[in-house]
Image (cartoon, rainbow, N blue to C red):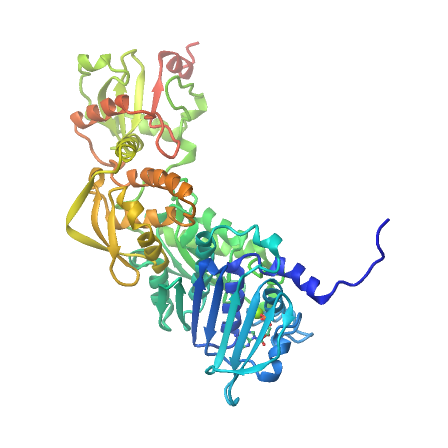
Length: 576
Ligand code: ADP
Ligand code: MG
């Protein structure tokens, strides 16, 4: 038998809603900062302790909440931002009147506020849904919101929290995204006493440079396009500047930072043919469209949208970036683009090559004019499994004749990357990676969140042969690099490592992350595709591969070489 139907108490309703609106500390931080932006603040300060689980404080100099309205602010569906008539025309970030009551239901929330002209500040606290009196308090113009012990009142939710470091990373990221969306507001973010960033009000390019890192931003190109009343503006990097994860992608729609799948997919498609698999483009995009062409009320967290003309928005993004990428740009330092259509999908030892593997492009690749350095095979090398090098083609592949007469094609970059990685791993497992002190230490500019994250891992990085120290906000001084990578670009290495160390929470995760970091580092010294090799270098590469474990695939799982046996060749020529 079911019990009779009753209305739930407002407290229970708020707790249920809290689960949707405030999923984790990052969501509470986002809501509070959005409130500060909506209040017209010119300066916002965010202080986090224990990843935001222990405490979040957001201080603004905005319009404030009048004494008589404080109690209303924490009531459900009470908002100053929406009239009952205007649900399509939303100009503020908030409008549902749910954030403060949800936070107050799950945690201890204190608001201290003073509008201009009011005699002093007043305070109200709501803890687990219980509201206190509104009392006088000290405070200047604006609002201070303090959240303590998040989810103490909803233990079920608390169980789903990750480590303070992982939650803190997500919370910092939320502020990072809002700071990008509102460059005209000064932002200061402090996490456990560490100043993550401290940015004055600034123009958009300066804000992008501060939050993406100056070096990265310098490579980015300005973007501007319009279609059917939808404006696209922002900055996007050429294909030679990519990251190991999608962290340096920001989307702002009508001043609201969003994590919209449609926009993310459009960006991916725009770069599809030029960014290698496993790498991610870098872009800060801003869309402006008429409010009626957009529904932001799809999800309580308001990070997803519905576009009235989704196809139009998608083609606008793909088209504008496509045109940007067609501009002539320097490709020096570009990672080799991995074109999925071109791999013969056959790691050693016994490849079976489908006839369709030889598309037109491969035939061009094997055509005589592009073969260079033909030389007689040295008979002694024929005793080696990968045989003797006979030529390098396209400055990218080494051709060899194996001991059993098979044709071996080696991807010089992929193969060398694996060799470097295994050398680093060997040193790492033996204790620590040999470091090479730099004669002139290098200063690397990074997004401020990345710089502080890497510095927090300085002792772990020393085990990888990387010695770094703080060098002012957003800058890191590199004193030593792994000896095996002494010629690599220290700045590029650090940028990739910063991605790797996002969310590095438990000690266990740290070990596997260091291991993954080795693979990432190896990428940085490897012989580039496009470099001409001397015959001795080719031979050394083949001998190195034979002596190295797991040399048949590179660290991204792609084959390092293909072997075409007599049987494969007969199949391809239709002889069987
Ligand atoms: P919403 O933002 O959707 O209106 P909230 O629960 O986040 O709902 O906030 C409720 C109301 O409290 C807001 O509409 C606003 O009037 C007021 N408020 C909240 N935070 C601030 C702030 N930092 N400064 C001024 N007013 C605020
Ligand atoms: Mg709000």
